[in-house]
Length: 167
Image (cartoon, rainbow, N blue to C red; front, side, top):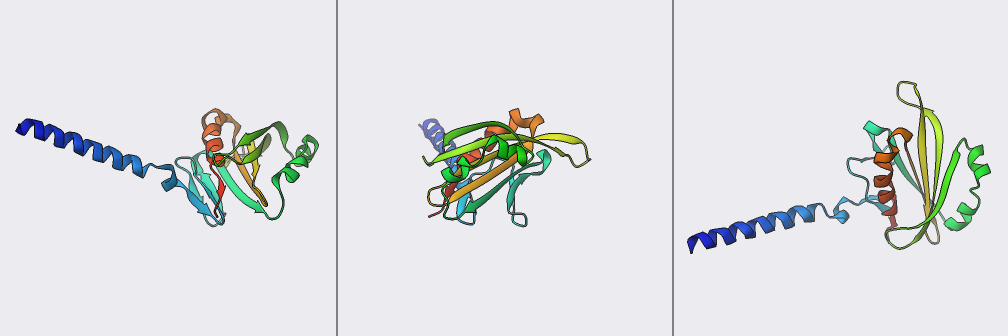
């Protein structure tokens, strides 16, 4: 009888520890607030309040979020043509209409541009520009080196899809 009680207590303790650790990894606890917007950043990314961006130092990856007041995102995205992107030094790759985690509509543009790493070596970067919102537009830009896009693009997409306006 004493052994059975010991086994049941061990199982109960294991369940409590598992429940507690899962609660600590809950997405809402990872959500950070930037002005009137919140986002769940990718793992190992940090927020820099000086530059007002989310970044990962080791991969030269940044995420920046801005709000364009009183302008619907569909109006803004209709003006972003391939010709306009090329005039900004970007090579257009694709445009997709997506659904955010909160169910809102969004448009994401994927492009490529050339820059330099910390040592001055020429490097291609991917730029994701996501536009969403209702009355005002939430404009998110994520830049990361093209050479690591297979490893980092999906976590960044999941992160930017988590953006929502704080009511």
